[in-house]
Image (tube, rainbow, N blue to C red; front, side, top):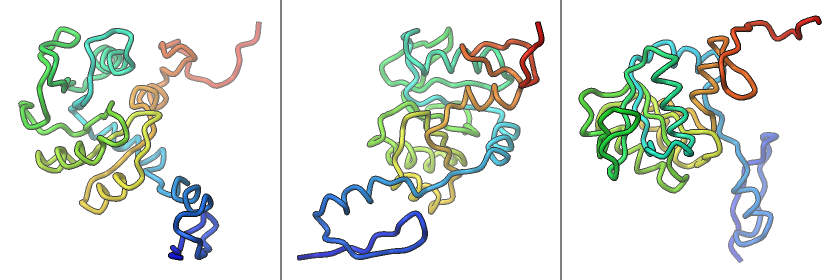
Length: 187
């Protein structure tokens, strides 16, 4: 019977049978941590361009909403990457990162978790420095791989929510209320 040594979140490790349910469960645990809030703010402040990989021309898709927000509420140059679309939100859509007119500061990814390693390879090939994987998408091995190659990786976080949070525009529905305080107003 083969065993593997697994690292627990408390820092301890133990050997477990490779095919055991416990080993499978422990392999799914999230131990990777990306940049903290201050570092994410720095990433957003330094960036001038964002490429949205997996951007959709469908208004019902979250990538469309994020693209709309970034176009209207930021000074970023926003590029849409989708090989099956000609235009998205009135702008030219590009088939891949290599086709963009510049190297994006942030590659924002709306693709399934299994596609993340390929997007990281594409980002490395064009010289991008940050890959931002959207909320709900998690691939720990890809994050570790990207970091080992020198990329900054943000994962399972929405760039729109983070931008709005840091710029006083976060609201339950995602719209700018103009209210900067967290206190409830007295009526």
